[in-house]
Length: 113
Length: 113
Picture 1 (cartoon, rainbow over the protein chains, first blue to last red):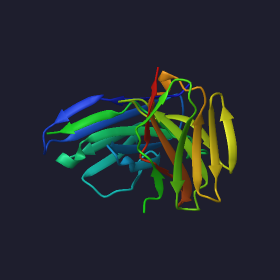
Picture 2: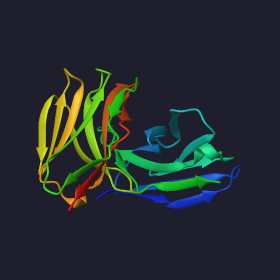
Picture 3: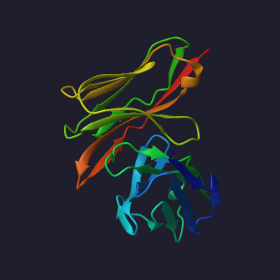
């Protein structure tokens, strides 16, 4: 069966510090991968999606970036965090034929102070 | 106007009640409709998905789609305290070769024993 991992689970970082969140998927090959941010009262905001290694599409311009160095690894980064980057970050995957069925990881709660 | 509207609640019901959760949408291009359940501080879990108008049943859960009214519902029969969670509706359309998913903001449900 497929499993998705995210770490860390929680993170408190000062403004201006760098960020690296990691997501890995097990039990499937060539998944589509997604990064979302969830803020209270605003639902899930798609940040990035990737259909293959090195292929990243950005949905929202911001100071975040994403990379996919391996088939089942997705990384969310920032060089300098802003207060507005605080939120619950979720990684998700889907199969190539069923983009709409997305399966989420446990999430990382980021607080920027 | 948001593409997907969902009442945030909270919705509080006694154990055993029938729960009705609803979403409306404005974009008639949406093709697939989904419901996710999200427990506090966890990632969303896919409950049900459907493509066409009509009903789809899975145990105590029934998903209903009315494309003519742009309205979807999730019914929970014999609600249990373990159903207490936030329920997110989601819908997708083909955008540039992939299914773009738009989420509602979620309805918080509390089932009281």
